[in-house]
Image (cartoon, rainbow, N blue to C red; front, side, top):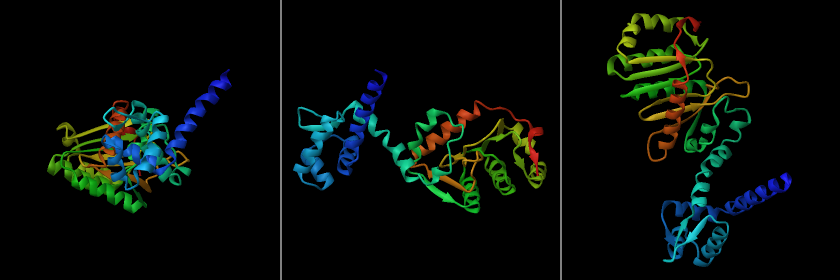
Length: 277
């Protein structure tokens, strides 16, 4: 009985994947996700004959993904509307399958993995220098806040972020892992600029967490995400990033939510646990 139920479940899923494997049917449900259209409207938008659209509409209706109103207008069903929201996740993983052949999601909670499609419009940047320079650029462009969760800190990053906090009063919240590597020169710089005063003023807030595997940095405009390699350590040689806008809102929201999930699950900052190098 258990096997029969499983087979029945997979049969249903297989049928849906069959219907979604056709590019024109995908275009139809994406069009209907944006607006309700009749047969002529869909034909015009897709640039194909009404006969061809009609054939695929029938298949999508049989699959329960769309429905036809009495007015002749087509729209997504609740099922179809929910299914289409899963496509970005498949798209993100498909486009980056080579990347994820040697990267993982680390210890990231399932609720964030289920929303991974939010990153589908992100650009991938490769190379340690390019990554660090992009983070520095993000710091310099910040005018409201910077939220950072990185496994280690470089002198370059400290040198770039502090003037933004001190001169522009950008709020800086950051999370570091226990035993995070911090450069000796960076610690000296913090002493030279009255870092403790910035802490007292509330412009800088900091917390500590056991380990960081998935790293995020964001300001009011941009966001970036770095995943761990299969060895378990955050790969800071490659990252996904996106600017807040028409295609970047979901990416930014995902990074924001992930940062604060970790923020509220972190403990008080303990400077004695830092590893000065």
